[in-house]
Length: 157
Length: 287
View (cartoon, rainbow over the protein chains, first blue to last red):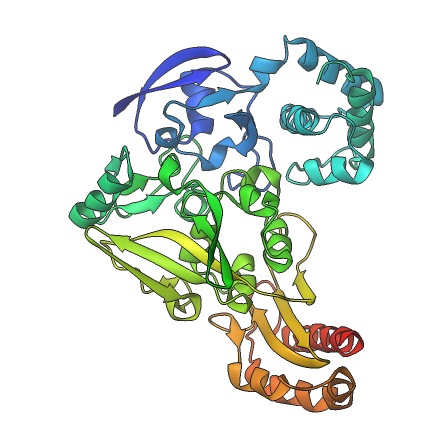
């Protein structure tokens, strides 16, 4: 066990845990942030996506010790922001959500994409979401959701 | 439960390697999956772990010029995303890196990790063999450089000693006008290779001046035959065109894949030779 400090959704936090514990488990169990989901547990589905120092990563493959001093943003960290609300509404309007399990990860990937490219082409959207699996929608409606977010959020990102 | 270390700099990392032989973990994208256990439980590492992903001294990509040759030096903790985005990265390496997994994984995984994992299906390895990459290995008080062909000795095996750390990868930047990297997998993202191919070549005065052809996931390590490449040097484009079937026959003796869960030996060999043929036809049209 070790005390490890990092920034979580803008606030400094400290967690006492084994440094090899997965960030995914730390977030869900120690921090009760259940917006982060576990799908595959091996980096293939993207349901556990978070931002680490501003870029999209899979929290199932990151041990807590690697997060020390890093900035982590979870779905809880963006859902109340103006950008987060815009993505939520855009996904809703596009019908991009069915069972909802992949949705938090999809939204993190959308936030990461629009941060570096606020007017992405369809191909760029598909590439940016390529690590996020959805078994319900067939993806087209999610791509549409990102397009709506991009159009409405021109002045935000 | 095993010990873990978080060195503050490279010097401390090397002394932890010397003292404990702790396994370096940069992005963790291979190790955390290989040793994963049940949800909510710790990964089942066999040896102690040393976090190195945060070490800024190795988080760089720079171009070095000496005499008339230039080299891209990729630091030991540089991520795949940073390699793909660097303007000097050779096109085959860029394409190989972009064929790995998906953005979230590439943001955290390192090029050095892909090499040290030494998977026969490691996509960047196929390109790095063709580019004559050199691996920089350090331990406290000494440093050595090893060509990638000697660094990897078998599936998952390298010459890296327990006290050593890979601190950089050197990629010579050479003229190359006909470049191709192709990965064959079940889908575009997040698939491991059934096989991969890299071809790089350059012409001088209408004759092939340099050429490297490598095949991934068709043997215990990446397949490259310098002897067969020698036979292609000095040929013109039209000479290559007339020799294509002979070249394919030569290569069919060195490409000896196996059946496994991802593909069959027959498929791998056929597609590897098809990719080679496609590349040779493109090459023959360039000169």
